[in-house]
Image 1: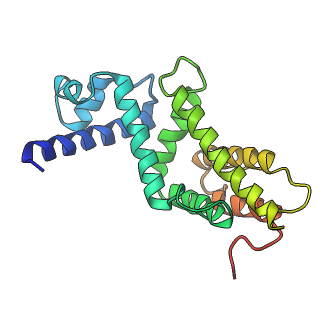
Image 2 (image 1 turned 45 degrees about the horizontal axis):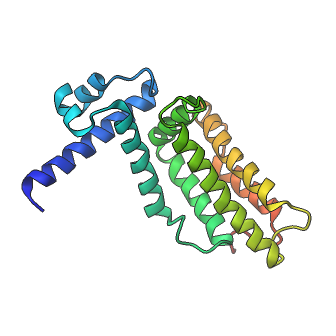
Length: 199
């Protein structure tokens, strides 16, 4: 790897980190590339060299978050079942230790409900993939008798993802009053006929 290439990668990483911080504070629409460049310690022209549009930079911020989540929790590597549910709980545990990324995600998700937002397609895909992953696990658990009778796996998956995101927003508002991880564990356990986590 050449020194120039490495410096470029480091510079891009610095810009993405600065963008994530600014988006978390001001949101996507209220942020500016000039402010992000200033935070990253480069010129506006230098930022545009790496990210020619505001949309391209937003995509890089979201891609980094997905890559970090997937690498840390291996959400896509586990076969459907209890392990997938446990990995979502581990992701929630990670998130409560990293408030900044939760702020960025929550603010962008709220902004992206508008179809003309550049991250709208990203969040639509993200939610669909998360629901599908949980639904597949609930279907697998139903087949083995580990999901309570009468629980609709697809509806339970939709409810779990909504609960996870809703709890994150409440936690951001009143962190000392909201036990995100405990609430998610309780919710999942009420759906199961076996312990979510062995004693």
